Length: 96
Image (cartoon, rainbow, N blue to C red):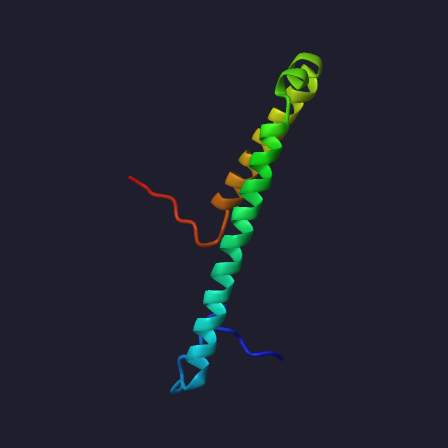
């Protein structure tokens, strides 16, 4: 059987004195943060260029029903995500 992992991620173990592991964990977290930032900037740029090149007038004029279906599906996905978040084990509802 595998051991239970207390703190997943880049955090070093807390039960012993750290040497080089602290530097490695910090470097891994820094590289991950930088790469995620760069990827987010690239994704935002690509979506912005796509929106700028899109001609929404022809979509709404000719395909109104398809646009409405897309909006309803988007709302359904948002509601399913919210419902999933509410049913997580750590969620506690506030009682007045």
